[in-house]
Image (cartoon, rainbow over all chains, first blue to last red; front, top):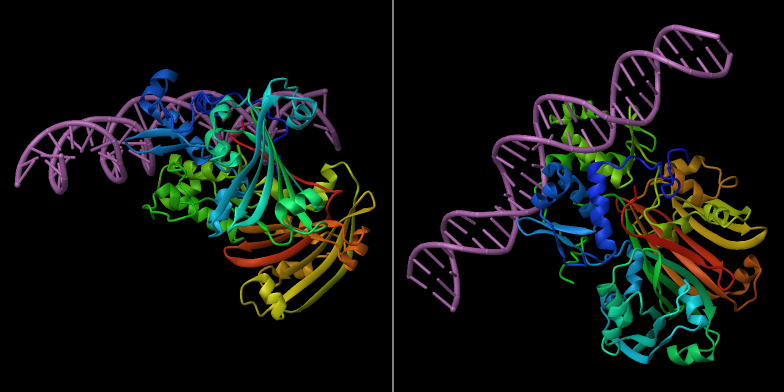
Length: 250
Length: 250
DNA sequence: CACGATTTTATGTATAGACATATAGATACG
DNA sequence: CGTATCTATATGTCTATACATAAAATCGTG
């Protein structure tokens, strides 16, 4: 046990070395959205001027960012901010469309309800922080080969994600849209099982009392709540699969 | 979408550079168990002799292994193989004892059944590969503050994990034992919901027909099946929580 | 214009050397 | 015997340089 250092705990506040400062600086710009996905970050040559160090030093910082999948480096072209990546295979359940496509089934999507409103007490409680601004509330249904696959009930903080105001959630599922447009830094999943009530049973076309899998997910960027979603899957018929692979690739 | 390279797919079989060869070589020894957790890997000085290169080159290989949490580097002491780490927070559900302790509740464990046998057809199907050797079958119950928390039904491949023969699963839950003694490279989780039948209801002290969360997990080392486990949690009362955090630390 | 060849350029890998820093182990001391 | 100090040493960071490599950009030619 002594070897497992349990990183999250107390950082000894080690003296920030130059390459770490560079890495943290760039990381910050990416995570705050200052450098959005696709943005080309300065060339190593420019960075060594900016930070007054050798190319090897900025290269080390960039290499670590690349290993962490925050940037993608391409010879001759430069280094680019990656779009928000799945930090773990589990999160693929975040994109139901991709999940269904991966199963080789045809994806269907149906927007049930989408409204914009000033956050009420329940919205604020659900999103976490003391938001008083506007939110978007979305209800929709995903289907595979025409059969109900999951129903989704989502809340998006419009102040944290103003771009969402312009998105067309009738054309694109909110999960996909968010995943491809909004970088996030933390997510929390809560998984549980319930039995279907009348409403859920009707929406999913299953029997009342049938088991359902529930996934509640909250997503933040730098501790600021972005969205909260509840997904309801028919329980026995469907299994969520997550794969993990150790080690390194390449 | 174009930026997301979907790593798992086709590796362009890039020319293995020296530092990558070193990294892969060391990684292999760790994952095969040749260098077990706690083992001190050769000093940089020895490695540069072994591979005939400069210290910067071996250092780069070791740095990447450290970033991937496969080794831990300590000044003056050397670099050490880390014990199997959680590759993702989700996997903390792999260690129910740790999960319950994290909740601040007292952990209880009860071995219901533990038997060794030659793998039958059902065992082989469950573990995957065409195993014909011996397996250990375990049934046990975990409780928190004296209340049933989950029941576990596990199969361990004794040929792949011969050390398990000497383990005392009456004293230590098999999940904890495996996590701390056996390195793995791949795991697959399958999550679903069912309603409790008579047997499950009795074991978990819930009503027949109550929702239950089911987690099936399979674990491999280098494509060789190690163990298969099914966990049954009471559904509404309990929630599995997983957290993800982007970026890098330090 | 289309298309292949050439050039340019940013990253990728590797080197030798230098100094910093933490710390395990040895040593000295009370 | 316990503790403070010293020392040796393995890792941590950084530099300046060199050449390799992939791919974008340009050029040349039919």
